Length: 120
Length: 205
Image 1 (cartoon, helix red, strand yellow):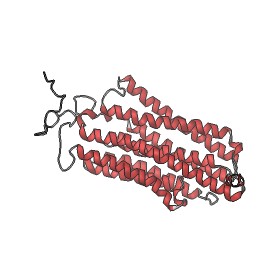
Image 2 (spheres, chains in turn orange, cyan):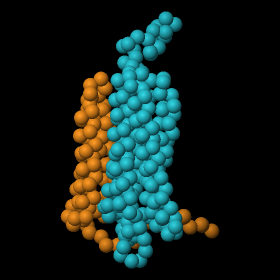
Image 3 (tube, chains in turn blue, red):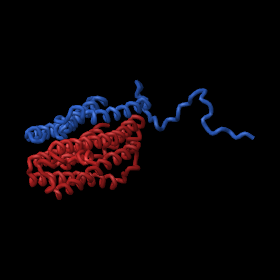
Image 4 (cartoon, rainbow over the protein chains, first blue to last red):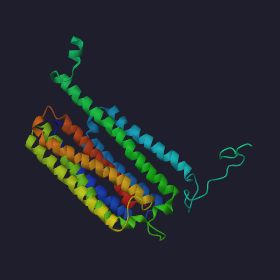
């Protein structure tokens, strides 16, 4: 695996990471819209991370199924984030206030949630 | 007993290669668990950010907390960590060719860059503390100190392991460098986490 000379590859990856960092900063100074800035910033970070994983961490030269060791946890993290975002009111609604400071919604016919009153 | 003795790894070239592969696979599994840990931190940050945007600010004014954070300092630190990843991979390349001395030099350079990263981080923390900003200041800084603190702890562990490896570099040669390879995987992972923390914490609000 490491017997081959990857010197030029490593230098190219280093240069790409440096350029990627510079582009991340420059893009953040531009106004691409709230979600536009976030999408581009995360896209560049993902490309940089892929370069590190594939070339510096040698995943490109390992057995192909080893990639699932990285991709599966990432999928789980996406599920954690995605499933929680549903609860924050992102499902098609724009919000100005804080969900955390809002009173809990009243569920009709849910009954009394507190401790049962004592019977005398 | 004979079968058990035959199953002991490290006997012969084939066993050695298999052992090297098993060790790397184990390291990847460990890193998978690390992905879940940092993933949970980032998930908590994103969900809190979405559900309580005003609590991610540093006061009643419109300014976000990020105005207390310097992206220039963070950008410098990003460059330092990227460079350290390069010196780390060069260290592995050197030992894979049997060049112990060069491997040691690159390891020390990596540890030095890691120390520089931590030094800058400490300076950044000191600026916050001087302003009376700590983990309990607001939701944003709670997340900030949690994520960057745990990352810094990983860098510190990496530096200690690098110094240990550099000290015992004579144990490694072009055929036996599993420890160096696994340490490199760990160090690159620390770099990976920062690649995501930099835009998420410092640039994107």
